[in-house]
Image 1 (cartoon, rainbow, N blue to C red):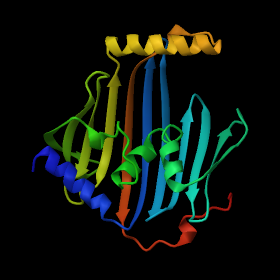
Image 2: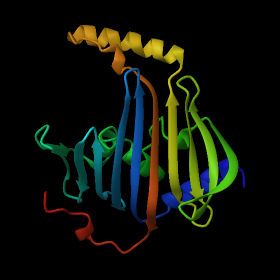
Image 3: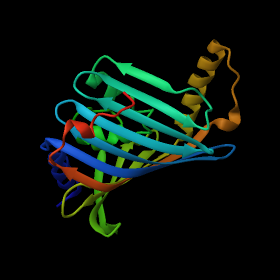
Image 4: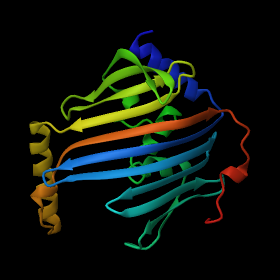
Length: 240
């Protein structure tokens, strides 16, 4: 199988499921002129078509822990974020619709929901790896004892946004996704000019040392399960 056939087979696997569960981890390293910012976290998802979802993400960055939960129970779509220590008050969110919620929370979820829900066909963000401009198969590898196809891809050559996907040979599930963005000089110059204009308009001083040079995100899936018998109890949480 070539790279595109593998990606298409994986995508079909996710699109035809009626329910979905996962458990995994996320790691993001953001390199700036001053320092590296490191975020580590874990997540879990439970989804029943068409619109029942529970997503939970716990992360730690610079000794601050954050817990985020999104719940869509068929009647309402709500979310909250809490922090340890209490660097800010608990944030609560209410959304008008399921679609509106999942299109809004990508940044809050450090890209995890973008990956999961684009695989499930619920959203189609421009920068999702499924919309990469090129795919190329590399040598197969074993990831956490799971034999995997290894697929290299390029999303946007102008930004130098590329990555690697490892797809289980046996189950055609995504086991690991690594996305690497090393901002080109042209892109950094354009972004700097736009940022400068925005900050000046808002009266905010600019810290040159915090400019991002590169970003690496790794999302790993320890468990992926399709079509389990899932009750509404696995969706709802007492916090809501």
